[in-house]
Image 1 (cartoon, rainbow, N blue to C red):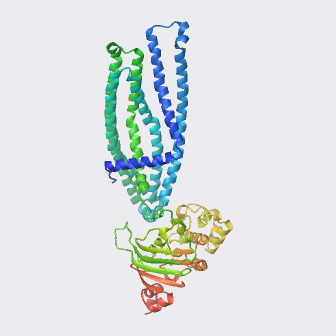
Image 2 (cartoon, rainbow, N blue to C red):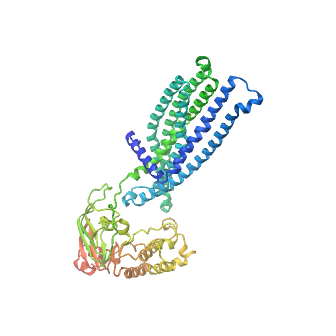
Length: 600
């Protein structure tokens, strides 16, 4: 169950949320400034100037009746003033609407970019520990919170402040005793509302966190719907979703009860304030000699003020929702990058393709197992050499490729490419020098053409077709109803495993990078396709540094060199023939896979 934060944490999170919201607002501040000016004009003119002019008319009527032929002479200036006030006030109202729309459009655009850039530049460790659906939900709520805060500020908070300032400044010189009592009540009201606001904020954050978990559970089930159906686990997933939803209901209910409690307390104070103004209005003339026009102003201004304050409960509820919904994304935006570029990181330039792992020490910091994956590992791969990495599961093969790609950073030692420490260069420039094909093909819900061209966005159609042919993918693509324009579905679900893998290989072929990393890249292919793709990959690897991770040893048998890993250590290193003759770990693995041990 999500636990409410401490008040200090809540206050810090609120400050950081306001920082990010103001950061995107001040990129184009004029719509928000226009909104403030328009709100002041709208509230000041239509509520206070209107009433003030009417009080002057009432006071003039109290002096004595006005003859029919004197109406325009006496009241003409007041009538003109009222018309001007209403015209300008309504203009301010429409400017306020425009300013709110414009502020939200600009702010949400910049917030979307901020969230996307933050998430896309976070490490793989960050993403593997979170639901993708939850991150999407948090981003959406963050943007919605900004819009809600802008509307709350310009439609509720600022008008309330204007109402307080205008009421006190206009009435204080005329009825100071009344304003003194009113001020005390307002201060009491604000204090109670603020204390309750502080108590409700963590409840709102907990409710938002529970809602994000619901989104994450739903996304996880939908993404893996094939596994759900093939194992007949619909009931199990339904129960997980029900549990998450019920927790969300409980969190929302706690938030609701606290909000209603605040509403009851603040409404009670409103009743007291209106009782006071009723007494003053009824007896003001008899007790203090207050004029009828002033009494009209007193009642109207105070009634308007209490109406504003009566909406404070809903306004504070919206603010609680703003900071509650935004809290998780705020923390994510403040979370340090586990893999970050140094200041002024320069592009990595690869000429030879030499790769060196020097004295590497690495431990997965987010793992319960604190045993190091590598301790003082050293490996030199000359440029243009084709190297196979083999070993049992968990020996460190894939981890080594992740360190080369800087999906994780080493804790000790250096990873060098052509003598350049990759941690001192930009991650994007590094990864653009490496064509990577993982065990599970990574496809977007886009066309086949777009997925292949992802390796080279400016590629021509002819280049994409040629890459598909070299990856043995052209024939099956042409057989599809829409050919290269076929949409592959989320994560390529419309294609078979072998087809997805060949699309990914075509992408790597098109990228034409000087370094090639294949992590079980042919494991999903049938024997016939594998033979064709192996030939294509062999051609592709010529003149390039290639690292091939494989469990199927036939995949690496023809490579220049094979490195055998065991428990994070290099236990054997040599050609296939030399390792077979050595009769060590590699020979044992080979015999198990080929069945040679049956002959002994």
